[in-house]
Image (tube, rainbow, N blue to C red):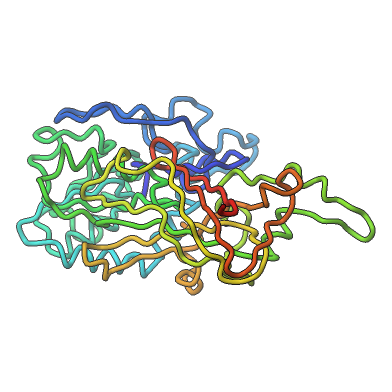
Length: 396
């Protein structure tokens, strides 16, 4: 994942990188044609998104502070994004193995492969080593494009890979690539499955740059949620009192609206003791071979049954991505799957939305449940599907 896309979540604070950013205005592409498309939103780090001198990394430092030349001409958004998650992403060995297997299973010797958001060029190099005839690697940031070319060269793959310094929406068949591609690979998944606008970008590539019925990797994905009781989460997101002092009124500012990355809170969910009150529940299924943002309902209600007595502290979000239609090759951010994968938790991890009982004490009382209780979970998607919100109610 790189400057071809971004993640969008409702957060209280402002973060200028992909996987920890405040909600931005809604974005849509113009209607797709064969020509270059102009997106109404530009991702952080893309060349066109850096318009002002103050966007350059280090411009906010005092004059006597050290700043290496290698960083002095880079955008702040790019440096922050790379250091936030790119290194963790590249060192997520099971992630890389997922893509290598998916590519190896799908690529044929005559295939022209297209990658959007190449970043370091890692996935493009995997595609080349899996036997692709040629790989076109699209990258919206000129500095990442240069780095990708360098890494591709030192790995002896320059004759097999062409790096194109554009957004995928700017690429035109016959101008930037000689023909439509036979296979698309991308990693534009956020902490939320669709948080980096994957449906918009993939749908655009499908219509303009890809041959009909071509393999797309990942082929599909599922967004899951669960409901948990977790004293650790409760202790850093609410207050009851101290000694003989009643502090509960401070909970009037408790944010039960926003979906927030566990990384923002500064913990790994798998490191905290918790009880699952409602288990793994699929709430969004995305088929990248055919879906676009209009394919998904903006609001759905799921009725679930409580599995244990307890207090619901949070909705937890995680996802699975599948290498092909068989869904045998799986990449997951479920806490149990990331417990022994620190890199994955540092690039994706999970997100949570805090929960109170909306029917008690103005929505400030903890949400107590009993085994067998039925709950309605309202799942809301933004117009572009990049932002989610949940509401937990007692079923009638």
